[in-house]
Length: 275
Ligand SMILES: NC(=O)c1ccc[n+]([C@@H]2O[C@H](COP(=O)([O-])OP(=O)(O)OC[C@H]3O[C@@H](n4cnc5c(N)ncnc54)[C@H](OP(=O)(O)O)[C@@H]3O)[C@@H](O)[C@H]2O)c1
Image 1 (cartoon, rainbow, N blue to C red):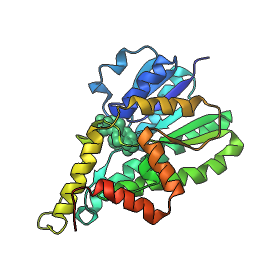
Image 2 (image 1 turned 60 degrees about the horizontal axis):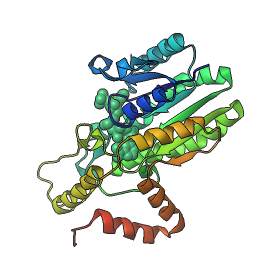
Image 3 (image 1 turned 90 degrees about the horizontal axis):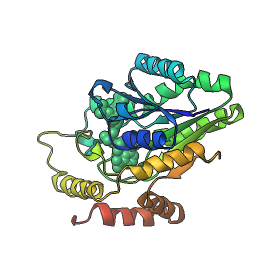
Image 4 (image 1 turned 30 degrees about the vertical axis):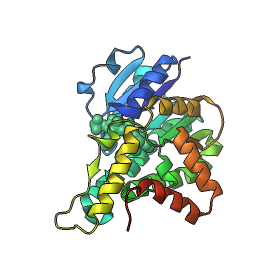
């Protein structure tokens, strides 16, 4: 029987590429997004159905999961992909910006998992895949709030897999490096605070270096393939670095003393800045 994946945040980037890839491999896909009425391309694919789902709205999650279960007869894999970057100097962030970032990237993931667990538990089967980030295990300047969310999901998921293992439910974190998507453009929420100028040069230089990394990055297909591997390799492996950059940096973080590693990060992200 065909397997079914439900994926969040599929209007663009990694989510959209993952819908395409799973559909190409013959899976049914419940492609969920905030505004499915705007989507034209995915709706044309065979075995793909669109559902409205905002990860901050528990009722929409419940409705989308229930409709997908009815339409496809089951769900084998959940991909928690929806998320965005709230970015900038921490002192410039408003409490609302910080809360919204955690509501989406952390509590949104927990909302979806809470809703699917009774079904997975009943079946004694299911795979939960979280699209975290290499930024869930290492850090860069101007991303402190975003890193807080991705480190939170990494730690939560690592603990959760203990509880779910005896029920044959797998938990996996897919960790992309920089990937060229709308993440660096329309999806980004930039912190701004008029009159706070002390950070100006540092912020400008680190922002430009980070945007350049996004421009030079590979497309989202590499992450879609890694998500598919995590869904199908049959292992209980928890972490999947999802690009060459991610594999390299996470390996360096693993083998180097923290101070040495942070020196290398500073050389890259503060390039052009002399204090
Ligand atoms: N691009 C990178 O460099 C990179 C690196 C590491 C990790 N990631 C992670 O990869 C995931 C996907 O990002 P992307 O790079 O593909 O960026 P993207 O193209 O901006 O896609 C983000 C998706 O999340 C959706 N979304 C945002 N808030 C949502 C909410 N409340 N409910 C449901 N959907 C919501 C967006 O929907 P709308 O169209 O409605 O806004 C969009 O579909 C994110 O979790 C991101 O943190 C990205």
